[in-house]
Figure (cartoon, one colour):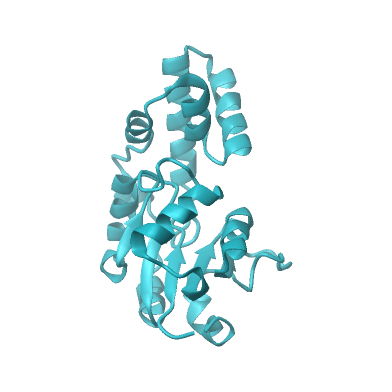
Length: 213
C-alpha cells in the first residue's frame, strides 16, 4: 500500500488514559448528570454507564433522552486543570510515529479542545495532519458508521488506503466493514476477526509495517 493514511484513536491508543484521565472524566460526567438531571450520585453514575454501554457514549444518551446541548456537556465534562500531571507520556512514541510512512490523523470520541491539548502534551501534535473530534462527527461517536462517513468525506479518504489503530475492537469492526486495514492495540492474546494486526502499544507499529502495507 503506497501513501497510507493512519487513523489513530487517542485515549488508550496513543497514551494510557486508564490511570488518571478516564476516572476524572467519569467523575465529571456523573457530577454533570447529578446537577442537570437532579439525581443522586449512585443513580447518576448508573445512568452514565447505561448510556455509554447502550449508545457508545454517555453524550448520545443525554442528547437523545434529555435534549442536552452537546457542546455544553463536552466543555464541562472535559476540564482538566492538572492535565500535564495526568498525562502518561511515552518518550518513544514520537520516534515510532515518525517511522510510519504516509499521513496521520486522529479520530477521537473526545472533544477537540481536549484532543489537541493531549497531543501537545504527548509532544506529537505536529506529526498529525488533522484531528477529527466528536464535534466533526456531528456527535455520532465511534463505533457508529455515521462518524466514520463524516471522517472519510472531510479528508476525502479512500477506506482501502486507511489503517485504523484502536484499542476498541468494536470500533475496529466498523472500520473493517468499510474496507480499512485495522490494528488492535491490546495486551490480549486473542486476535478478533476485525483486526488484521495486534500490537501491545503504538510503539510496536514500525515492526508491524510489513503486515500492513
